[in-house]
Image: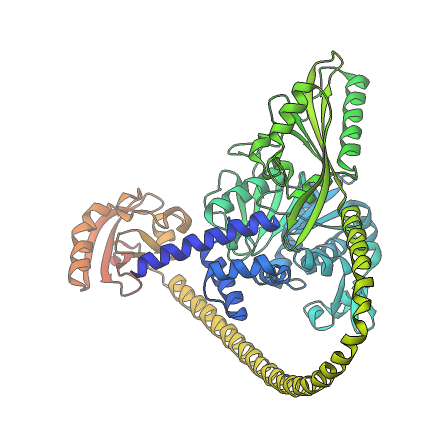
Length: 621
């Protein structure tokens, strides 16, 4: 019974996500369902709704609820130079190498993906200004900062921050790069112009290319594995060979060693390897007829200018070729109908705009067959709680030979004109009825006087109710303040706990490293989970070469098959055994007798601990 209810809940969540994508163009299907479920449930609890179906009904009737839901899902957590240790490593180790590999006259291109309210982008500007000098930074560095949250982008573009939000910044840097503006601080204007903010969905939109540095911190962790793979493919395409990728602490590229070299796993900094192996993302190439020299440049430039003019047109326009494939979607059409550049090349019939708000496919066939322009006036389209009206033009296009080559569909927004016409009609009808109503006004006035007296009494009652509501709101505000203080206390406790765990981990690693003998920890499946410095010195294998490998398949100076019976007995009996003397070869090829002790490991999921040291009788001297 409980499993069936969970399935129904999952299906209802998928239906809600599909509705959000169709109604507002926000595609959350690539996000982790556990995270989405928590964020949506939080918003549902805030409005007192228990089921996804009821919450979808609320979204259909309330445009404001969309904004509240998006702010809840798109968690904007950021600060200036967040995680200072990672930024210090980036500035001291990565940026100098980046600058060395970049010619002095070449532009340095940086992308902050998921920039939230802008602190990360401005941190990049400060870092490069300090590394290059302000004048050189203004001349060469261009920073692209993108996010899917328009509200966060508005805050980022203002460049205004409170003194508290700038506390991680050194006082001399704050004085150098921020100007006090009342109670807030604004980022210096000349450097601000080198930061370009824009809306961008990393799961759908084409990536920015030829990047020297790409920062996307604590964003991938909200997506499922499939979406993460697609995003990393885009990032790999976006980076030049040798370009750097900077991720958050919760993110790493464990399965991309062929494409990304680890610069610092601790700081989550990676470098794109040379070559194109494993790159599945290829942007559509610009097709230009064969030619050379100035002719080729002129054709490309003319076509580029023509495409820019069409894309900047004030009227939403879509072009379809003779095979029914979309070949042009201008900027206004992408904004108006939630389309992207990725829809170019798709069959027109697969797009929602082909059948909503009006069936266009049959009109295209008619226009093509009759070789004439068709117009459909005042087509109504519903967007949330609002209505739009369009005059749609379907125009067949012919090539120089007179043969049909494509169809251009243009949408002219006549919402205001339609509303004015409707309003004029309504006013005319109101005026016609007004004269009749005036005849009975005198009689109604007497009745109205009595009703006004009753209304005054009702208003007095309402005033008392409002007073009571105001008191309840004040109580709620105090409760929220108390809850906030509790959350701050919990956050501080978690920070202290994290520091204690880090200290304990460092202590244990130090103890293990300090043991002169070779210490190897195997899990219950006999895979290597720890390989200390003594084991490295004894056998010559580094820890990164053996971790998570089957111990008894490793090829080194110790014949491990001799130890299998002892290890198996230890796993079954959970008792220590040894030492067992094994004839082996040290890392330098010298014959030795190695004493091996085996003890049960009481850690996570069990296992054994092997301690190996050279027999004293074999030791020189």
